[in-house]
Image (cartoon, rainbow, N blue to C red; front, side):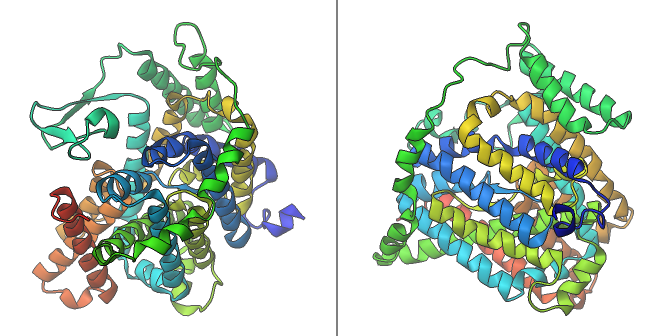
Length: 484
């Protein structure tokens, strides 16, 4: 029954392979169930309620992706989007967290509409093939960079006078700090055990992959976790493994459907209307292009979305291809997450870890969702897996994804310039959508210079214009010109 439903034989995979891939994806992204409630609780939201909302949104969104689209992608509240929710919308623009949830819910409805009306599909078809390959390679750099940061392998030095709190007027130890381009990265001096453990885990994972050991990535995560428990490291801690299962359920009603309360007050004040619309736009454009980038970058390389799938997008109506179904599954996840009480739920780029581990169908996502659901009861056990243990997996997956760059004609500036900004800046700016935006903009500049403006798809003109508006909006927020 399972084999037939998920077409395992057709995809040349097995239940055991999908289980292994699902577990790999889970461990690569499970950090979100602890990070997201910690981030959103800064707005006044109850930690326990957001913890459960994060798990439920992840489980529901991932299962819809699995059962409707039959692809090995997992969804969860997105990093970056939750920071925008907390520090910009709630703290800086002074929306209540209920109103912020209302904004996210509306964003989800917009995503559903642009998916149903084929706008999302038109965007994908409008992206030149060279940029699609650049996005794939860029996501590889991005994933590897996340792994390198999580491994603690980098340190950053900010010159005096070149940094400030994220939210003006509040101390940086409450909101974090932002530094300008004077900040300088460097390799750590390995005086800390975390990067040492991560390096050992990276070596183990690479050796296992080169020797073609089945389940190499997951074995690497488990082995690094166990090594981290040794007295010399002490990174993996089994202390304080206690968790009150009942307490979060008592808090959940506070966030459940609170988005509707927020919507009720969003447009009461005339001064809030424009800023609300711009915030919704910022949520939507980031969510949309993060998802498109993830699908194009990982789907093309792995073969999950073939060239035929991409071509069929223009020819079909409804949801007949895997890409169309996956886009729809992603689009409904944001609204569902907002109703439960969390920021934008989106397709996770960490899904590429499971895909590289052999995941080919929605059964991978079913297993990932199951593991997340079990976190309600075993979160202390899941919580002992340190970031240093999952970081090597992200680094090696990033290395594998760099193969997409070989399809780009780097000796031709017309193709190399937009590919560079789409691929490399994606990682350096720590944002998939920002990389895509810069790729679009420089693609247009190059085409205009070459007197080939007619080759630019109208969707790229519109998308680039929207990105410019977004950048202007964020600049106005940063300079406190836009406020409520």
